[in-house]
Image: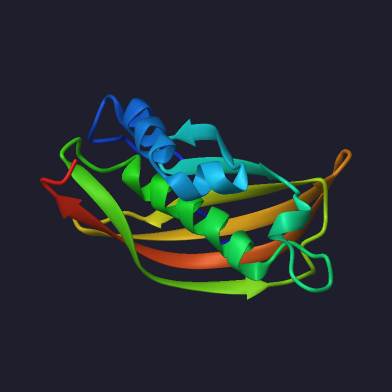
Length: 151
C-alpha cells in the first residue's frame, strides 16, 4: 500500500458521526453485511463476513464485492477530511486482485494518501481473515471528489 500521512486534521469536528451516518444510508453495505469498524481522520476500515451468496462460480468472494467494500473504505477515508456541507464520490479507481478472496471475514482499509481542496487520492487494501491469519487479497488506488453544499 502507498504510505499515507497519519496526522490529518479534519475540517469537520463531527467527521466521525458524519461518516457513520452516511455509511448507514448505503443500502448496499447493509445488503452485503458490511460494518464500519474504524473511523479516523483519513482512515476507515470496513469488516464484512463471508457469505456464500456473494461468491463467484469457484466459491471465492466475487471481485465486485471486494471492490465495493474497498471503494467505500477509500471514499469514507476521504470524506472524513471534508467539510460538513459536502459529500464524496469516486471518480476513478484501479483494483489489483492479488489472491482468491476466500476467508471467514474480509477487512477493507482505506487511507488518504494526498488530500486536496476538491480531489483526494487514496489507497486501499482488502485482507481475508481466517482465524488469526490475515492475507492481502486486493489493493486499490482511488481518486475521490468532494461535492460542496451536498451534505
